[in-house]
Picture 1: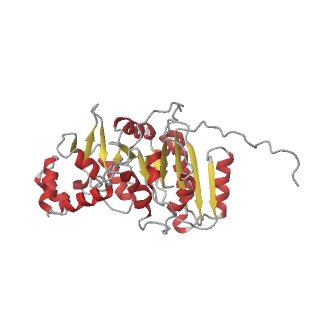
Picture 2 (picture 1 turned 120 degrees about the vertical axis):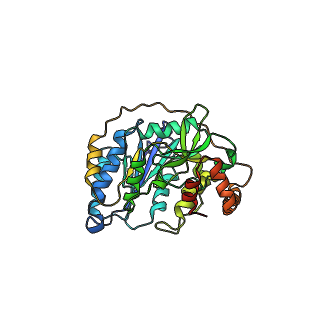
Picture 3 (picture 1 turned 90 degrees about the vertical axis):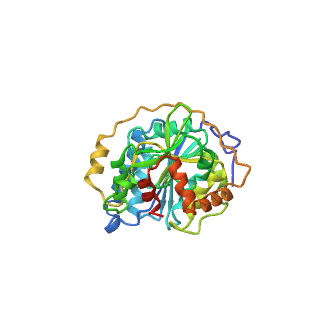
Length: 343
């Protein structure tokens, strides 16, 4: 039986939407063996994210088949107001499907999707927003320069600036951070040929961005996700899920895939190390601003962008063309051999 009227009937939803939402999928099925440091690493991720941001972020955490003890800790974070939205899935539904739980209803202008093992550094949000401001066609911006991403889903940049001096290979600003990333994914070292120069794009006001973007942490303009597939991913992890749901939509919407020229985040992996704690303890509490920068909306290109991408990749399969492009953009003969494996 129902008596009276629900006081929420016909109440208008508060339209004061934040500028920036961050979505973090979390998979910690136990706190032993491979995952013994996982929650502490996630704690560093979440705390560093909020501490170093420049705007009051909205944070969505999706627990994807995590164990009960982890879910209880996440609930405590939510009670403290650290997490705005918490979704707990008792069975693993996969990384991308976890992200979609929050992504499909997100209305913020910028949306960051990050793995749970990323340590955010001072100034990361300002640096990312600056790239969006200076490059109106930016669709995604990563705060971590990663080697050899310059030809991955970047045909719209290369074809537009092929004969422009704005697109050039220039020295890497922070080669040690690039080495640290390589170590975090299991490489014992990173040869100099991977971290001496990197493809960069100059804006009208002379600022730079790195061409290409990784996706373990990246910030997107909201309209990019109007191009995602209608259904869910069939993969729990890897496969082509991140390619289809986070990489390709940027190109389909006509956006550039870019990265900040300096390093503003660190991939931690699954083992807690001393440098992580040292870096975490040195982070500064950033004063928040409610300013919401106006960023230019992306317009979907007339030509089918994925066809252009395939044709560009096909042209680069010819060694002469690839070497010519690399030479035009400032590489020496030795660097070209390093970039092409001698082909």
